[in-house]
Length: 332
Image 1 (cartoon, rainbow, N blue to C red):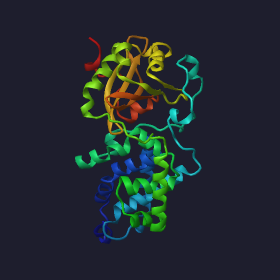
Image 2: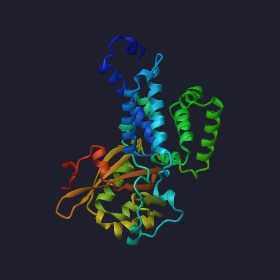
Image 3: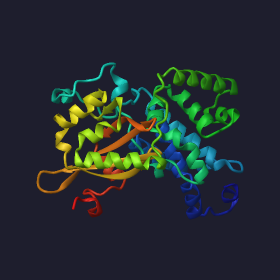
Image 4: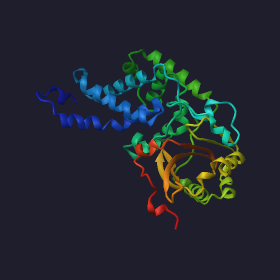
């Protein structure tokens, strides 16, 4: 980067290409900070625009990456200033709802819930690095991060996820090493006391049999088979609704009652938050299907402990999913 800036003429295309190589990791960083795929995309775009406008401030060999992170951090902190933290419905109320239609009467305001992220947009590069960082984008972990004050959140992500040194983080945040270490200790203590909600799920390739059974039971709407895949205390929530359910019996009661319109749905796997999730198309009443939800699962001890169905169909566009399910997945 130094060579580019010291040249009489800056090669804009080369500079843009070098900046673009950092886009995915910056998106992952902003996603962990903001808890939103949409906001993360906007934050990275804003970061790139600000970077272009202040190229004269970039100095020193190897400075491009840290400089972009400094800008991205400032963008995220600006966005988080005065904003209520994002969470999932189960984290917003102490008591589960009853599995009845009236439970849908309360919805959350826009921007209140943590959103999923396409794995390929927030993780990339060396396969070993991807494997090592999967847990850092799990939905439960990203939701837990939102409990932290923004600067503590930045310190924890930079130090523990991205493995920056304390003095590097201090330089980025214009603070002291002692302040960084103190913030990290407080962040760790907060997450440790967060009722284990930061515990990552285990949905990976070795859960192929369980995931196949889940898809089969859901698409056949075989609730006897479905309930056997769930922990007894399994949780289900459906942003933007405030409701959440606890217990396999209540989950099934919901699906057989108010949620019975999902009968006949088609599911397709999609890699989200370092795990396999599912896009759901629901029958549209006219013989076809329409986008309905993105289902994110958590698995512990070989059974499903949580199902979060995001009912924001804008996620289909963001993730590049089609408006109708692939023909290969349609029933006979």
